[in-house]
Image (cartoon, rainbow, N blue to C red):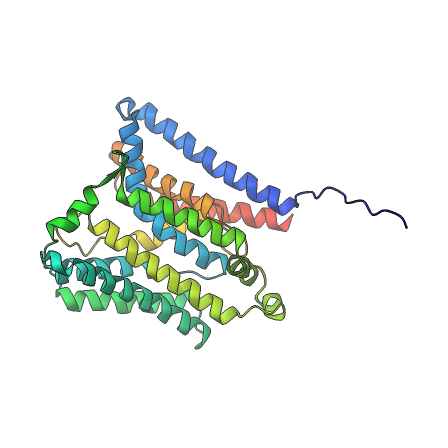
Length: 324
């Protein structure tokens, strides 16, 4: 019998394209970092880079959930409102009492998880488009935190809780950066090495084929939105550690910023292709742009214009690449 020889497996063009996207995103980040160093030579220190990581950590954490949602072909417009609602609840209910820290944090996580689950149920069971469903949830959450605060946030954090926000891992990295790193590594593994991660990509690439392959689309989508809500609540708690008073504007820009970080990071807006490794750089790019604009004394609305141009450019480039 003739011996069968195994030919070496070559990488698919799609895999090479994805790798080039990630390399391009990190190259863009390094370019912006270089510009930042040129504009402000005093910022060429390790501490300034750690500060950039700290500023990016909240957005980076939130964008993990947004990335998984966009890979499925969906979108979540209410993540920022989850951040704000959990934030005002945490400060208001804790009200300086260290004995309430654990129960209040658990309640906040439950609220965020429930909001994500609600989105998933509406999208899969009521067949409401993700854009419409999450926009409606966003309005509901805004109403809830306005009713709770009556437009005037109340309460104070327990000093022991604020001390957690002052912790430094290895004497350098804030607790928020550590949470971002741990979550990123965990969900990169989930997306790349598990059946659940494979199902997320399959649903985004072709939901009909994924159903025919035995994937329970509805269950997977519900779980993805629930996870995103959980991460949003965790993000809110981590951000709250660094604050002395509640703010109704904490999550105002986070929904848009998380979409920007995800798309700039190389995840296809149409779904099916993407990953958290690119979103990490995307989050730092968004925060670096904000920092550069502040150094140049440019007003905040210019940031929205630049983000819009970035999203347009990335989506247009991906569409062109897909058609060729």
